[in-house]
Image (tube, rainbow, N blue to C red):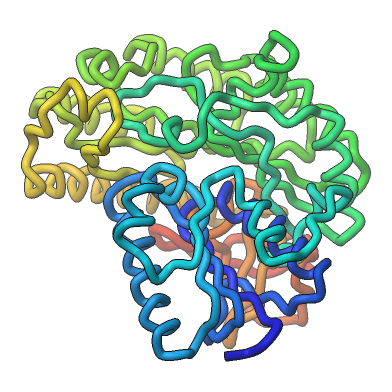
Length: 432
């Protein structure tokens, strides 16, 4: 066990990662050495930031806590603390079943961890972070919570009502990030679309993005997790007019059958979704749309699933992920529907959907051969430099593998000509 060392382990989404980065900054300010997701967990203090979204994520969090609890019994680590969404959602159950944890914190009260250790919480550093990403990009969380009432989703149970971060605070945070060398912002929220309505009584995402894009040094802004209902269409104008706003939109659509959209409580119709996508493509030529779809929600018939397959075939999304429905305690679905689709059928549908998307992805990537793209270099590997274009978000989208014909600098932009492609990767060379 290393004295004065804190190990922080983040499970789940990038929104959790921002919380971990803020906590790390407070530990550093109090004189600790801090490591994030270390190869060797041996800290005097270990903090697990948990995810509670669906069953698989919950299981991963519990297994990590059990593993660390065993390490604590063996004297390999010291204090063990747990925070985050799963802890927020199942606090009493976890306190009863995991006595090896010294204390549990939820999604929002983790700041109390510092005080409980007898240390100071520095309010003037509240928006400061120790970045765990490469130095040239950072996640920017513009809101917490969610006001939607989707049938299957447990996230509002953990995060509560929507709370936008005021624009002025976000501008200050971005200026601080740029001063550290950040060039690329991954703008995140559970629901970007709703941004500002609680503070300004209007959907203010287009104005926020314009204000952030005006900050010198911001080279790319990429938007994650929009909601299709009440989409702020003026955002498309901003995306079209601003060179540093990536032509990229991550928007979870979940399904297309009107029956399923109603059962899921999505407040939108099949016709409206098709119209939304068409308008995006018309107003922002070349836009890359990333979406997430769900299979196996209670009541999904073969006909509903066939409509979903046809939807993917029709729209040919540049980026798509999918997951199987999880029957989550506390949700509308859990209270009102029976989980009536077998795990085997869920998996078959998931496989069919992703197989279709793989062929679409291969075609999308092949269409980029012989084109020049602006690319940022994320890292150097043995055989390639690895970069991304404006159409690629870190960790989830295709990467561009660039031949080592000349030395390149991580965090710098280059013009790259695409020479070859696979379903989930591109190959290229720097244009001299």
